[in-house]
Image (cartoon, rainbow, N blue to C red; front, side, top):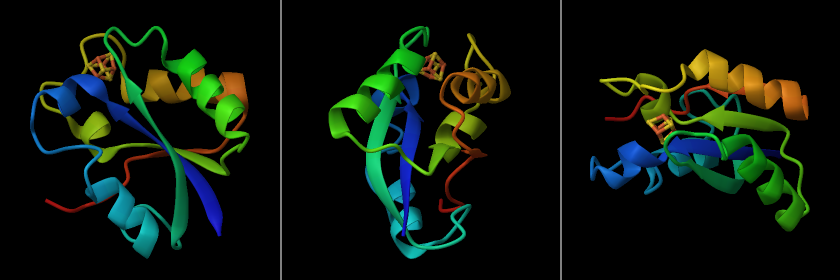
Amino acid sequence: MEKVMIVGCGAYMDGGYGCPGEWRCLKAAALGEGNYENPSQAISFVKCECPGRALVSNIGMAMKLSEIKPDKIYLSSCLVNAKPGCPYVTPDEMMEAIQAKFKIPMIKGTHDYH
Ligand code: SF4
């Protein structure tokens, strides 16, 4: 089973929109729905914090402390589709920075639930 890390937008989470982090990303991973090709094991959930400067190092810290390198890193659907979007970085720029550092395949978005 693939091991995956999920990255969520902290501003969105703290805004009380019910997303991400309570069930959608995790259910989709468990059942292999949405952008997950197969049931996958979510081994870490990293919360981005504005303005996002610490995100790459926090991802590295999650891997180091958990001692698990994920097979894929997913940006949560809420992070990718938030309206208004992130004022600091686009999802593509975020993916580029993470991929450049860790060389782990990245997927944009996790689920299609409402
Ligand atoms: S920097 Fe952008 S993606 Fe990160 S928490 Fe803030 S708004 Fe969300």
